[in-house]
Picture 1 (tube, rainbow, N blue to C red):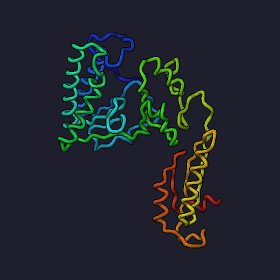
Picture 2: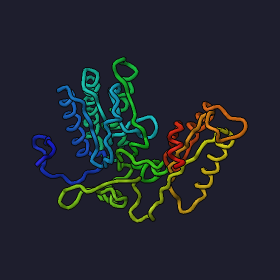
Picture 3: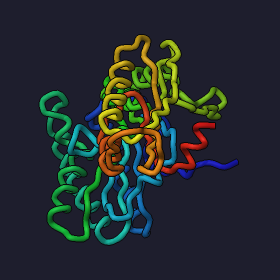
Picture 4: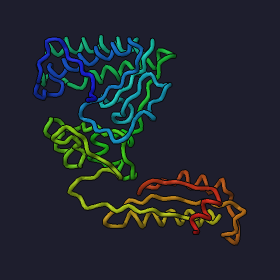
Amino acid sequence: QEGCTAFMQRGAPRKRYAVEYGSKEFQETMTFRTNAVLAVLKSGFHAVIADLDTVWLEDPLPFFQPNCTLLGQKHKEASMSGGLVVVRGGHAGVRFWKQVIECQELNMEFIANHALGTYDVSKYTEQECINRLGKTHATKYADFSYCLLPKLSFPDGRRFFEEKLPQLEGLVPTIIHNNWIKGKDKKAGRFKDWGLWLVEKDYTCQFEHTATPRPVDSPKLRRVKIHLVDIGCLPCLEESLNQLQRGLAEREPKIYADLTVHMVDERTPLYVGAVSSSADRQTTIESFEWTHGTKNMMTSVSQLDQLKK
């Protein structure tokens, strides 16, 4: 049978119960992970580090940019979460990660001499080391770059479960991080509530997603496709987009609507009167913030002919 290679620290217990975030036991696990990553980087491989409280719905490889030495899931607006971190192998990656290990060792030394609850846990984590050193290396070294993944394709627990930002855009995320909630049972419960607990009792995975995940006890959300034909009139186009936006915003229950705007050029006689330039109409479509689903634009006359049929 196929499986995954697993590494165990010498002398580590065969089983450990869930430990509290920021505790000495938690940090011991993080330290072991940082040391293992350095061995991977020194071997000439790139390292992809993912927390266990993530669910993968799509292949993330298309998002891994070759010009990014350090790439990760966005935390808040300008920092990196530990949910998914990618470090590229090579001199710059190894140099950076060695300093991450040194930083984590200092964290361990501090935690050993201070009681949990007497300090801000978030300031003494591997994640803090990665962010602080990553930003420093990006300004100090020309061969190092610090990059963040798109927040809707790689949402954290707040963006996905609470703010529901990917859902509002009609997007299926690539990886969802079930953070911003503490406790193994609470994390598992939230995954199950949303139909994202994928492991069966026999340890197989049976899951096919066709739409944005939603709570399992919520009413089924309708999804429609809207085709809007641009007839060459810019004011008409703007008014049509705004009316569609307002009409769907007022609708209950909410539906997701994927919008496709079919642009015609000046040679297509669909509008009698002053014809607006294609560039102006294209700019309007591209800049319009459609909040009910995906937005696409088609520009060929052949595609319009297919729609008429």
